[in-house]
Length: 147
Image 1 (spheres, one colour):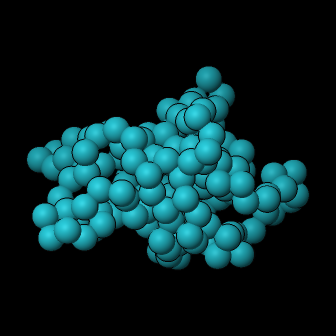
Image 2 (cartoon, rainbow, N blue to C red):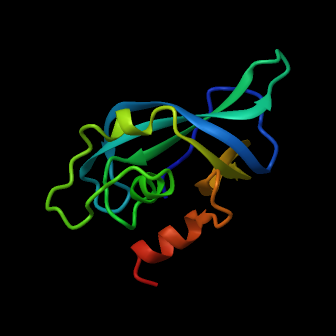
């Protein structure tokens, strides 16, 4: 699973948050944990309805593989915020999807995860703000692994 990161030292509360996608940043490549091959990645910046100690909106950055299919976090996110995507097209490219995601509103569910000595916010589900059904990130992993 991709490692979420946050740019704020304040940890958002666990649970559901209204959010919007502020930016999608090309983060280059990193080695795959599975086969060691380089894989393209992007950072998706979510601005939350929760504010930090300085009364600024909190942000959570989710680093994901720049892969668009119905099993990936990015693919499911595109569907959840109603960005048209043809999963059957060969070589579905990321071009234009970054722009299509910017400004989209949604509801995300945050859960705190511990890694070593650190605790960070992890986006475990998301949905269109008008849709009550959340898409569980755990179900995305299970789908991708064929479980």
